[in-house]
Length: 199
Image 1 (tube, one colour):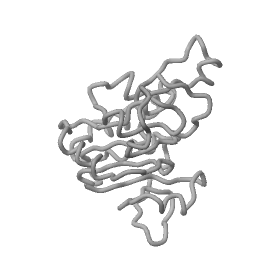
Image 2: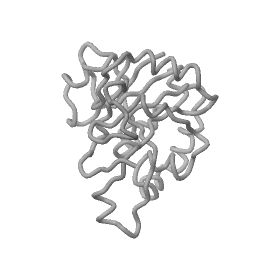
Image 3: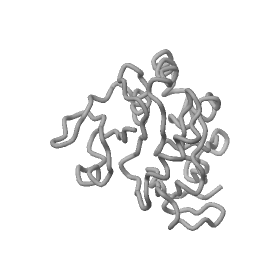
Image 4: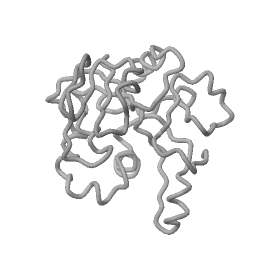
């Protein structure tokens, strides 16, 4: 199973990238000492990550990790869970336990919550081309209709995914059901964590 990530612009450093046990990086540049594949930069933000579902990449089974996650326990348990519980043509995603309080306050009448987090996800590249096909088909509209890829999954395609168990992937700041975070395999920074509450 390949462990992959994506790196573009200057948000993260090479030092941060090298903390992850990745086999392959999709990037807007070549990175010395690391195997890289060009990333489709025609998409905005995290929509770029969805291009990894293109079956022409011939990636096989993959675990995607955002660069800002923290691996604090043996990642093989996460891989074992995926292999034992994967469903054909579905992505296994992290589960969200928090609300985005800042946009909620700013857009009370239009804010819609979401329980999907794509900071960590596993998939079989040869079985998920339907995701890439829809991405390409509706490319001009998706970035307008959906705030991000997580909400695209949650509000449009609940049949495309299932979840890793809550205890495996926790958020750095917020707790969920008072779980002991020391037992989590991965701690997610989840980008803009400020102002979030658990759900």
